[in-house]
Amino acid sequence: MITRRDAALQLDIPLEMAKRHGIPAKLSLDELLELEKTPPAWLVQSRANRTGKPVWVDLACVVCGFHEAARPKKWWPDYTWLSCDDHGVDELPEPEPGLARREVSGVGSRFVAIVDERP
Image (cartoon, rainbow, N blue to C red; front, top):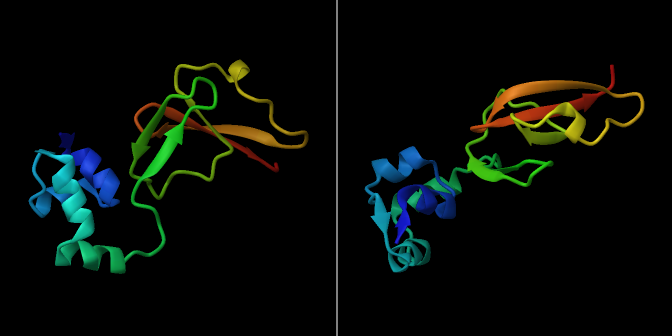
């Protein structure tokens, strides 16, 4: 059995869409494979309407490797590194010479985006 969230990840659809179209809270792998093999009209339309922007992204900490799948937000910066919010700046790779570093908190459930950029 897998969760609705895992099914949404696999189908590359928002969790809200999975709920709206009746994907149960838990389903078997066979049910998921059937959805992928013979997608309903709403799923076919959703895939046809894709703009190229990912529905889900995998976020991973450069320090400890913790990762999670999350829905990307428009305000997230183009980051150089991600780290868990409990890691210190001394644990991160050094910025390349001539680059300034800034941090943006609140990416995913626990990440800080590290942005190395020209001043």
